[in-house]
Amino acid sequence: MVASITPLPVIGVPVKSSNSIDGWDSVLSILQMPNGVPVATVALNAAKNAGILAAQIIGITNEQVGGNVESYKENLEKEVLVKVNNLKEKGYANTFD
Image (cartoon, rainbow, N blue to C red; front, side, top):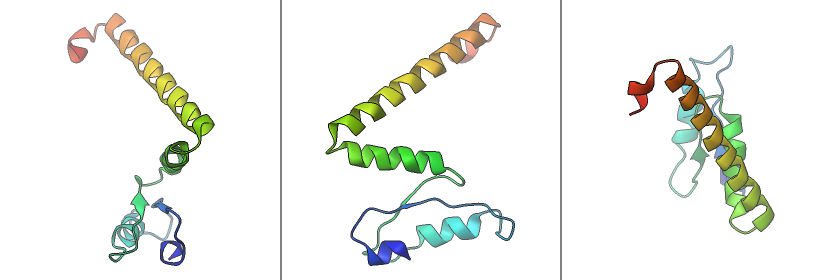
């Protein structure tokens, strides 16, 4: 609905609720917007991803926000590498080769 009345980018966040069909009704209502009404969609219950996507969009023209997004993603990479190394130390080395 909001996407049809604003020229601004809209990010849909499908939400699984107590009265939904495992969230599929929410997903489909966002995905099935008519031509001319684009809506970016993130995963079910992924409001954090919606916020990151919004920051990436803003970061295109705002260097400070763009830099913050870049730093955030670099930190994510470091966290993943630490987890990979922890798994390798515990004998799961073949999984990541």
